[in-house]
Image: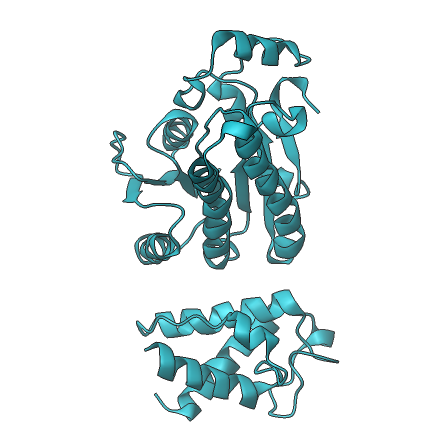
Length: 98
Length: 233
């Protein structure tokens, strides 16, 4: 799977998140949207839910990955900031863990 | 009531086995987890041999549940061990075993269960504690401390996973005649019971009653609570 496929999985997981959010708090699915961190749309538990949805999507393709890594949570440049950074992080994790 | 998928650790004996049989009789599906084989025979019973202290075992169990059943509504962390000993004489290896099984095992199973539980409309986690915590029972330092950790975990998890619609509560049984206390002297049990408001041994059914209460859909506002039997507070 390439980066584009991984981005599609991230976006589908965000679409799932949007299903349980009110109209006022919908997450714009844009590369520039700040997802996590200062002024981000996701609090820590919403981020956990997003990561679990992404892991589920991979598991459905028999790819077992774990995204909630302590190192990732403490990196000074958060990999969860926006769609491009999460996509890159997922891509890197898939490359290492599979 | 719609049939539920209920996971019980330590399901092969004692309270865990009685709970498993109780839910099977109610038409639920039970996923039992223990280190030993189970004697329970039912089409709605799925047994997994696993060590609750091993993360890899927990991952395997939950992956199997997801594949087999697709959903989980309830996790009951019942697996536990107890060793009575004076604090000064307690072997450190015993402390590690008690903390691993009672606290770490509960922590691991709660963490791995969240992903399946969050999809349930009435998701519940129930942890087993003990009256040894509020009574600060002499001779049970390691056991009571491990269960105090479980209680704190229960309260904090309730806050953190409340947004997923999962309630998290605990039960602190007073003495019940199970294998867990079979090595404790009658005198000691009697002294303990005298400290209770209701001065008699509890039955496993008293635990079942509280579990049923926590599982009711109407109990959706009850979370982060520790309920002790026998009038201990």
